[in-house]
Amino acid sequence: MEIDLLDLLGFYLARLPLLIAAILIGALIAGAYTYFVIPDRFTASSRMYMVSASSDSVVNLADLNLGTSISNDYVELMKSRPVLEEVIDKLDLDYTYEQVLGMVSLSVVNNTRIVRISVTSRDPQEAMDMANQIALTAKAQLPKIMEAPSPTIAESAILPKTKSSPSLKRNVMIGALLCLVVVLGILTVLYLMDDTIKTPEDVEKEFGVLPLSVIPEGTLSETKESGKKRRKIPLISGKGGSDQ
Image (cartoon, rainbow, N blue to C red; front, side, top):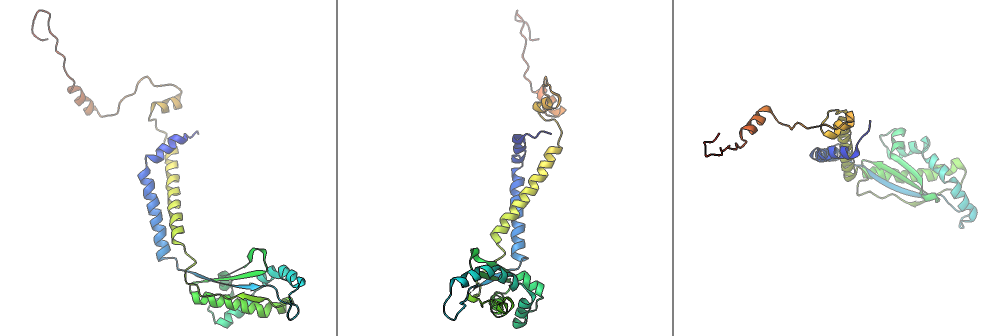
């Protein structure tokens, strides 16, 4: 089946009000769902520097190389059950290990020796406390496990004042776009399923011949009414006779 893209575009444009309505409805539904249903979440972050002096005062090249090599190891061990369960106990949290693991995001910052600890929660105070406690627990426990120098807490988490999610603007745009795509998909299916012949070009495309004439649209009563309104032309005889 060949699809005339210009014809399909004209099919869309003929239903432009429907497409605009779909965009507005999608945006309205997504905005209402985001505002009234999705809870606000806050993210707090602390940072740890994975280098500590092997002596009491000087950080040498060996310490820097060691910090680079163990950064990813620290990230994985911070997700371990002993670390997070101690955080749960210290803060008396009503969460399971799996729930806390889902709230925590750990990453090495741009291939540096710095590890970012981010915690997302509905309560900004809880997010801050958890991010700081994870750093403190990791600083105390992980050097014992890895037999490596203790890392340094480079930055403690602060109380987040703005929500990190959801984004009302982004969700409204996504909702409008999704609704538009759905409506365009439905219109495309209707366009492809419509096999009626509407124009002389459709006749030529279907049968390979051009029609000799085209019957105008209208009802029989309209045709009769049109015939009655035709003007009569009088015939006059050549010798002044009466009209015929």
